[in-house]
Image (cartoon, rainbow, N blue to C red):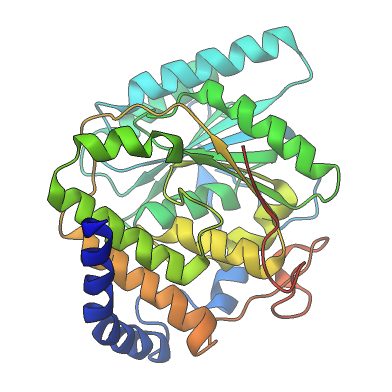
Length: 348
């Protein structure tokens, strides 16, 4: 198509300059990114505020050897979401409570990560902590705005679930859709305990394209061209904010995540491929909710981060990938993976 051809032309025009900038950023101590050794061995203690005690609750660690104490952890990153968060939490808690009522062995936790909001997001979330208890709902507040990627990582790193889901605060994908992902995850878990299932809106692409302006379609084609260059086209929708992974997969992938903002989803898929984690893509129902935080200025930032992934992992190979299924991401050989480092990928 014309849009596709123009997008490819744009990619080639900006590729050299962005790659040069990305290479410089990677070489200079990874610019604004946390070095892997620091990410894996961060000793800062994370705590949750309890409504029933002045003593904060010390958060567990994803990398601890303790067995999971919850069936499902739901991580919700939130930045200035005082208006959209309540409806999402109401729906999420209603679903989880009904599910537990049907099957008492099902246990859960919801972790809201306030990414340095300047509104009342923390206060809104803490009302649910007080209502449901700190064992069921937990609030993690970051001191400053780090980005959605860092908020997701922070929440997963202190999760207790056998399976871990992260979802957007706007509730664009209803929590009930997790059952589709769980079904595919169980199928994958029959062969390996390291499975990641990606929610997908790719089946809605034709209708969305018809509604978008020519400029937005142009930018969309350019973004997909960059994503294909970085991780291939096995996963058609890398950016849907609804992803589920087993604890073993999370232990391998998430501690090694470096990107803090928009393109972290692509990096997670890249790491899954490097580590041989089984990947599945499953169609989910998605509804566009007003109030998106993505702005036109974010496009260049996203493109820059995609180039960082390509340069850091493939071109200069200065970003280590530490493999290992049993012991988490902290041990094992570098750059290991099934099928020559490519992910096992299926679509449904």
